[in-house]
Image (tube, rainbow, N blue to C red):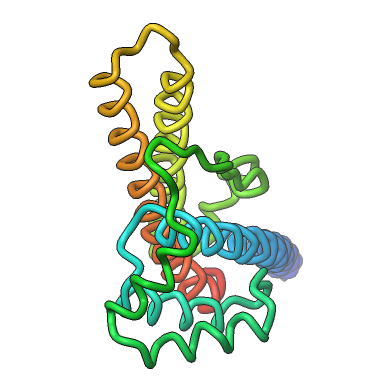
Amino acid sequence: MEFAALAIGWLLGLASNLLHDRIRQHQKAESFSVGVVTELIGLKSELLAVAYQMTSKYGQFNKEFLSWYVLEVKDCEHSEVPPELSDGFEELLHRDDRGLEEFAAISRARPGEGSAVKEREIPFVVSQLGSLQLMRPEVIRRVLCVLKQLHIFNSTVHEARTELNRTFEASLSEVNQRRVNENLDLYYRKIGERARMTVTAVDSALAELNGGAK
């Protein structure tokens, strides 16, 4: 009888410890999830600005892009776009592609013109990668996808900066200068495309994170 009581006490103590660990793990996962969501929302806001800047100056500023952009800005909790400007974008949607091209022509970059664009980071996510194991498998996959897309975006930014530096080389011939300018414009278009792809990856990750931890 005494042995049975000891066994029951031991089992209850074990169950209590397991429950405590489970609660602590869940709290840690929730805290991590909040941090990731906050950082990803900030990243999305920054990359939306980059996508608009690069597309309007170097890419195809058409109805397809603008429709995507307007919906994303509305969905972004911390959009850097003022409400009155957002309303103006919606009015632009009533124009045809030619009308949009005329609007974009105002801000079109000159050949070889540089743009102030920099790499983006999500330091909290990177520093807490070990905590990803607390999340559901699909959350892990989506967050890693964001990191992959962001890495490609940053690599493209670096390549554009390298090409921009070449425009200052006095030894470049006219032909090579023109080629460098074309390459630079291409890199900036790619930056806009990569910003958009990363935003899409962020949207997927946020949708999964809203589903909670394990």
